[in-house]
Image 1: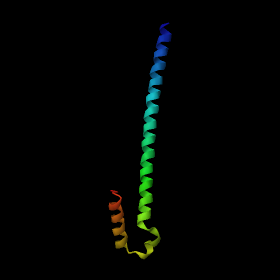
Image 2: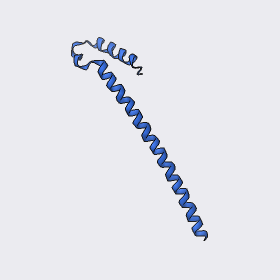
Image 3: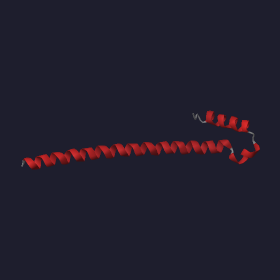
Image 4: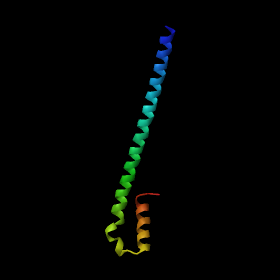
Length: 77
């Protein structure tokens, strides 16, 4: 009887640990997904702001000013 009690306690402990680990993993994955979404949104906004089609017509200084403007406009640091 003592053997079954100890096995049941171990099963409860391991299942609790498994639940906690899976919950933490889900939170980490959700945070990574939201971080990727934010980065993709910034990339889309910057790409539209930088006007990459006309990059050959600009000088380096003008491109740097445009990059600074876009970063300031979208509050990217």
